[in-house]
Length: 337
Image 1: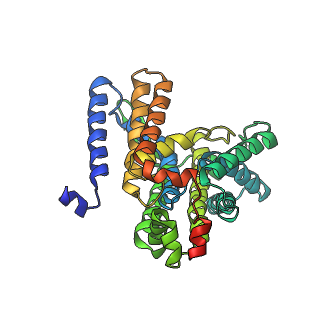
Image 2: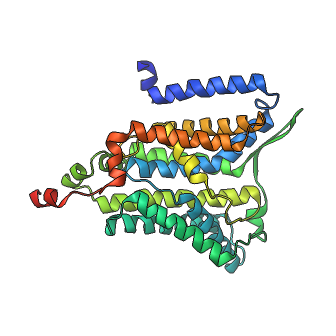
Image 3: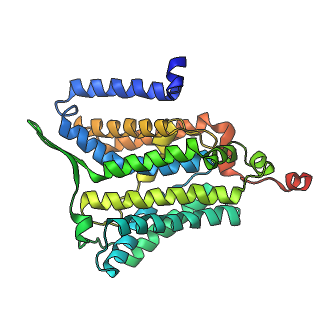
């Protein structure tokens, strides 16, 4: 295990790798399609959006917060970006990515403001914004999808195309966006002073405040980063499915949360790795894909997701008080400081 640590693989990541390998072998033996290239490429394409979400959510969890509004926020960004591009005469990829990231950051900043300025517990705040974002989107759009998107958004880009006996296999643009998002998140958390401050604030907010870390800035960075990742993920999801559907991303927040905590991110903050988040998403995606190939009801997958979150909360019980109590020093602590 010491040798694995030297290359950045901890005990949780090593365990996940073993489980993923065992599941892949089992599904490969029990189904005729799991290990085919078209299925594996489709699995990667479909997981890319969740991996981008996971990169953003990891930053929030590391900083000691939680957010369940990001998936519906991505749907809001899809609509705002589509309308903005149509107003600009169609736009292009550069404008689209900039608009999606900008709108996403603004939605993240709304969460940060509510949590930091108004001292609202993060899970309560994001439950509220989840409903505000989704309810507002459905009310404003009437639940109507947008099919008439700009050509640059509708024309599917294939990074790799392989013809196989079992069908054509394509890696789509969301995979490239995922690689960039994951790489940028790794650099933020592991190679910058701001990343170290995010870990410090998540591990002990009061201690971080005492050494001069601006907790307000940390909130805006964490939730703003998740907002940007959610916006880009929404853009990629609409590109992949060729339409903007208001409820297409509804419900993904719990799948992603379960995967990220499964990968070692601690509810309560201060711990988490990009590799762990990636492996968590891969494991959850393989489980969903495998159950589908085996003809098992999708509700079984929801049971698995719920169990993972429950176990994670139980194991983090000494830290979870931060999510259900104040994230800020008490009046006595402030008086003593």
